[in-house]
Length: 429
Ligand code: AMP
Ligand code: GLY
Image 1 (tube, rainbow, N blue to C red):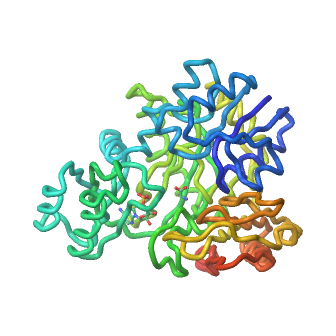
Image 2 (spheres, rainbow, N blue to C red; image 1 turned 60 degrees about the vertical axis):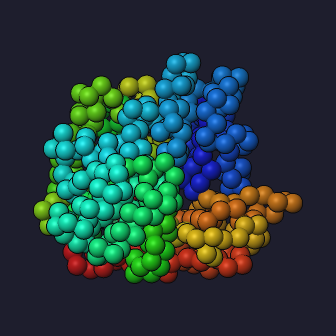
Image 3 (cartoon, protein in one colour; image 1 turned 30 degrees about the vertical axis):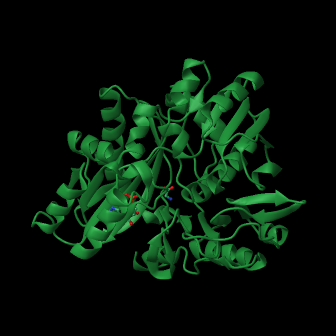
């Protein structure tokens, strides 16, 4: 098969790395890719959002399957456009991608389908939202969310009225997140532990992946503003077998069934961001693609051929596929540019990449990297994800940080506590 991966982050590096191992693969392309992906795939200099040029490329190269990493092209309708031209895409239609593209759509869908999630209200006008916050409708803390895509940054947990008004102003009046601020979702604050649960689906059949946990906040101890994700780990103990079954029965199956019933069958990878509350699992958000950095910790545990799975999901043929997983633990520590998620500099030379990859069972996935005069330099907020696989979580953590210690660039920043939540959980069990 000839395959095109769309995107340029650590997630796409992990997808390309896994697809590269497939006996079904003939040629691998990535648009636009990064310096790490360039070692595995032919880079194509088309941005992930340029659907027309991507389509022309897949036609001219006779690409058999396009795998879309990020949400933006899916929400913009890449799957529909490709299908109209007879090109196979692993990813949902524009209508189905609204599960991520509009938080208001996702909340109303969950309400219609009785899928557990936080209570909420949707507002179209800043003044009405302000009046509601000042009235007695909400109990603080509340969570204030921009409706549309905001790269994981349009969500504010607000302890009091003043903070909630600040978030409202930022989103709706100052339009910090552009058109995503046309509507606002205000929801109940849920307490518990977060988990990421992803599945493959062809619109009818569902194949669950192993669970993982992200670290969204910039600082250790989950403090500070949210980022795209500063690290992740995957180990079975994140969710008990019983909880996993509840998530499938109460959340995943009703979502796949409900989308099909409503005329928008869901194909591709569905990601449920969950809060495990004392009352059971509840949905914080849906994503219509692999998580980043969750893909980096889940895919190294996958024993089944990813290309076969993604092709079957795109071709409505998943009933013949079964997944098998390594029982190991995987930890991914993200190294970011100093200043991220605020402003940061690019173009810093990165050293030690080869040494880090020589650590046992360690892969360095690239996110924001570029090649300049033959050298790998920083080119984004999140730069690298040092990822280690080991029989135990403890060893995977040690290995990943040994890898991190080999790498250097000016003002690099990483959290030192990735997966320590998982260790505490294992001690409790
Ligand atoms: P979202 O993009 O909607 O998943 O929100 C980003 C992050 O905000 C989540 O990973 C949670 O840490 C937090 N969050 C979102 N919604 C809630 C909620 N209802 N209660 C508590 N925390 C939340
Ligand atoms: N790690 C969260 C996300 O991919 O949205």
